[in-house]
Image 1 (cartoon, helix red, strand yellow):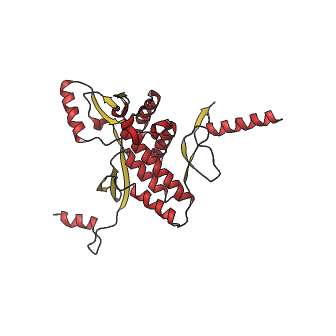
Image 2 (spheres, helix red, strand yellow; image 1 turned 45 degrees about the vertical axis):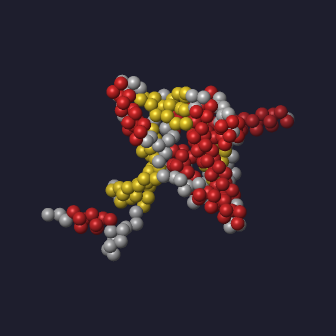
Image 3 (spheres, helix red, strand yellow; image 1 turned 30 degrees about the vertical axis):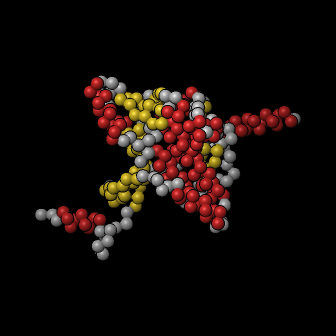
Length: 278
């Protein structure tokens, strides 16, 4: 008969009886919903994701690895596209907060592509169970003001990241920036469990998309060769391959050939300028 306790201990403990060192992998849940609408006014505005009463929210969840900064880049690009005036009054919402339909559409489209941004709590799931019995569409929602505040927090952390990367010296001001950067992570919530696959590893899951983006940004500090830049043509954030790269990697298939769209526009403008000067 197998000694299950001994086998479990041999998997988790080394020969000295200490817990083995596990590699860690960070994940986040992408909740894929395609029907987003907004209701309310000003600072009470909420965006709702609506889905069929007969389906459970878990049907729409993909658990993804956080090993690339894709989500972070999408957040920074959204922050760039939204009106600056929104963020100028975020800390003064009680004096009147306004957001345009165009900005709300940008947020909804971003959520369709990247997932529902917040953690779905048990209270929302209980409410949706009641809607199932009534055969009414289920819904989950988030506050627009809260979304913008957290998006802006990611952007502020990115600005700190830029200062640290561009000034790698150990001056007091840079050390202070690093402390500010680290303090931004104090409120992040993670859950973790030991998983068994080809190897034993610690699976850590971010509570929501913002926490996952913060992790991706922190990880960039340890990859100085990969720096974040913004494309001057399409205004999307991207990881540049070298210090001289100015344009993103966006591509488009033309006549069966994949071409870099923003780089092509740059060459077109350069040729036009050359013709005008001749």
